[in-house]
Amino acid sequence: MTDRPDWLHPLGTPPPLDNALGSLAATMAQAQVPNRLCHQCFDGAHGPALIATLSAIKGGARPDPADYSQILAEHPNCVGGPDAYRLTLVPALRDIWLHANTDTAWWDTCLVEKLLMAGLWCWPEAQQAALRAVAARVVLDWITTGTCALWPHDSPAERIHISDDILELALATLIDPEDLVAAAFAQETAHALDIILLAEGIPLAAPGYVADDATPGLHDAQPYRAAYGEMANIIQARMAQAALTHLTPGWCHQAIAKWDDADAEMANDLRALASGLSDGTSRFYALAQGPATGPKPSVLFAP
Image 1 (cartoon, rainbow, N blue to C red):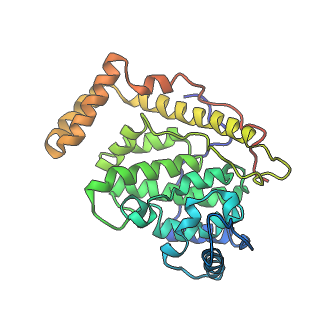
Image 2 (image 1 turned 180 degrees about the vertical axis):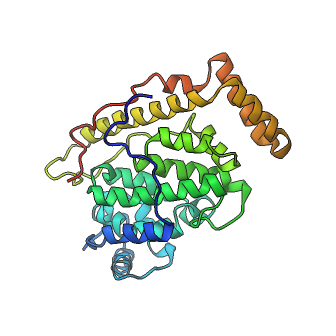
């Protein structure tokens, strides 16, 4: 692999999840409660009620997710700016993020997308690092033990969706995908195999909208979108190149043989992966053609 860009970070050995969440909450303590919300999105008494909920969260409360979930369904400017996401980040990780796969009350929330729209890659490095530690702990627990404290259920039907969300958060927090892929190949769990299979197609697209106050004085979203796209392409190329170093015919044969008896659906997914690698149609090949390193665009920097 090429040298790691200085804006990507090793997976490392993150702290226990409760410690990581505590540190994340501490870095968000200075976030301010908005004094108004978009009247079109939050009409009538809904806006004042949400502001009251945000004030309660800032004071240490853990309200019902239904009381603030709409924050994660609206644009940053409609919720008073990125601080609304900072305030709800820890409770949303605990109560909404992974559960949104199954709870229709939160069907339109998308935590990672909203963080990127709110200029996550421009946030102070302490905030990014704290969220990265949470993501690293979650992904390591998931692929090694098949458990996640933020998803305390044993539900195979949702496993692939949870794996998808966990990988997306890890990539959005700028954990080097080379480390993520290596960690997944080092395990033999279904959860680790999910990460390997998802690496062929998970999108990390530039957000269609970015809050214009992510960096003071910059009011054009287009530079953000171009910079995000450039970084996303590097992330996906690194992930594909790393995966291709492990995806040998021997590995595929052994994995298919193992999962034939344990999980027929997984074995079929592996056969499809092996077939695409063999005939050259795998998306890994296309993704791997991109640049796997490069500087962080100057428009994206943490103050």
